[in-house]
Image 1 (tube, protein in one colour):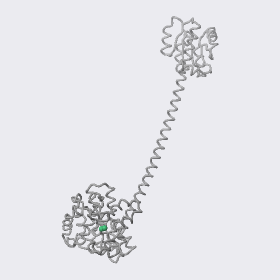
Image 2: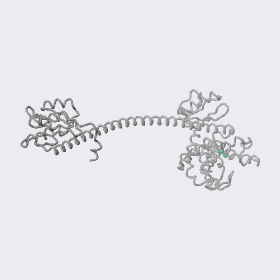
Image 3: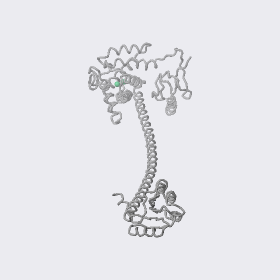
Image 4: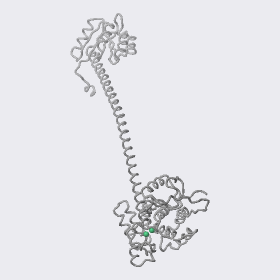
Length: 444
Ligand SMILES: [Fe+2]
Ligand SMILES: [Fe+2]
């Protein structure tokens, strides 16, 4: 057998022969002289048990059955308790059937050999028994190795688990940090856009909070049209900045309506969409919005400017901003209680000509929402009150635009104050103090 060859070792296997007759012991020793065995002899079961105590590596015990004080099967039973792996063989006469049964059942004997034995046969049996012992030992050794390796693996596994957990935690923390940074960047970006938007309004004072209203209505319309979150954001930015190109045009082009301008002023004015796009082109994140800015004066029928695009060639965001820009300018001109309705009626006539009729169903609700806030008037159980910037509270409704000392619109009429607005106003009022307080509506 291959496995037997593999486990052959040079250390001789220890064999213990137990017999009360000395000449039997001697002939057994002689028999084993040629094998790779180390032979130990004992005259009785008692002596043999003593020997076992000091020789735990005995691989084979061959014991006579008939001995004075302790029988062979009794001895084998005790030997089994002491060294369970040792292979045991009983030597017995013909008549000892009971002894054989005991030796096998209680003493776990591997074989029994009848006296007188045949030398060759006995050597063969001893050889088999020794190989059996080696197999048992090898098996134990391998099991021990497997057990150790399993323990090692378990240890590695738990270390790995710990390591993975640590790494995961580290990654999670890094992610949180990045998220925070990202959020800060986004907030800063938004604030910068609002700052730009305030600049436009500073340049063109008659526009008031025009850009913010255009942005608010445009985003509401874009959402109602189910545009993606990214598109809605681009539209919001473009709406806030749509007139940024007006910063560079002469005053005359700002003060007059387009049909009141002379050719020169009109030509200047008509450049503001392109100038607006060019102004923000260096900011990569604003480029998409720049395209909408360029086209916010295009007409559905191709009669607009600067590129005379028509229909769906005009980006949808630009089509929306064109409508809300128009509504905002018209609403500002009217000073009537029913201004909202008048504007809605007026714009209806422009769909198909100036504006994309597909957007028509989404207009009314946002317009009403944005302007009904603004047209809240005193007398509807509310009165206007001027408060110092230190006295304003969350939840108050602004009855007028809040402007800084140099005229920048900080918050629009109709805004309900939130804590972050209040903080921003207090900061602004220190940097650029206004002569007036803040006008709010309070219940009468
Ligand atoms: Fe414009
Ligand atoms: Fe505008």
